[in-house]
Image (cartoon, rainbow, N blue to C red; front, top):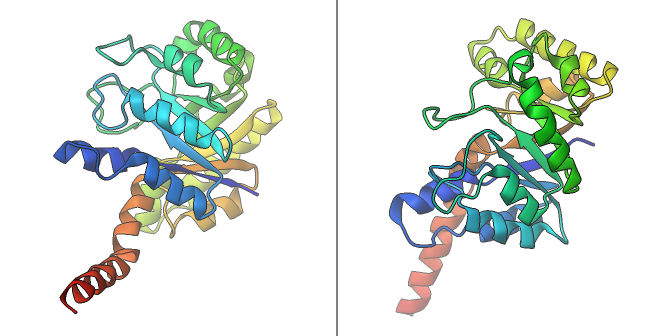
Amino acid sequence: MTVLSVNVNKIAVLRNSRGGVLPDVVEAARCCIAAGCGGITVHPRPDQRHIRPDDVRALAALTAATVEFNIEGNPFAPPRGSYPGLSALIAETRPAQATLVPDGDGQITSDHGFDLRRDGERLKPLIRELKFHGCRVSLFMDAGSPDIELAADIGADRIEIYTGPYAEAFSRGDYAAELARCADTARRARAAGLAVNAGHDLDQRNLGPFLRALPEVEEVSIGHALIGEALYDGLAATVANYLKVIAAARS
């Protein structure tokens, strides 16, 4: 069974836009866990635009006895302010998985995978260090990358296929080529001894066809679409609850 790991970054974005502590990232994660998800994902950045180090620590405590905890981030980004750096944060919180992503401050979101011919030797000792802390390591990779086999050579346990191009193609209605590219990438990864994760812009419409074509996928990490869909699916019930509170107060 493919594990659903819910990325709660967007909850932190909403909280940070107002300041204070609401909505509560830990409560949101607890709700997702109660609903049956198999993991919680966060992607802390040095600029702390959403998930902050204190969130990571609190979520590590929450997930310790419940579901897997996955921390994504750029292993090359240096410490900044209260952000201690990805390796230090992982050493402190000991997640089940570290997903390494080559993102920078200028990116609104992750939009490409690693070039391992360029970065592989730099990554190798970092991967070794992270595995020393007891977590498996996954590398964010483009579908069709010529470097998939190199991920195994430098010590990674998994790859996460970047599914943004597939999702864009799906929305246009001509996704067969991108889906085939993802499926071929998954087969190459498995042949190299790597497990396969996937994520980025997956949603309720495009996830089913994706998983049917890629039976190898162990885990999907979904945040943006899932939180967006929850705004619609949960809105009517929330309004009804508010009306009940008002009615009770006026009775």
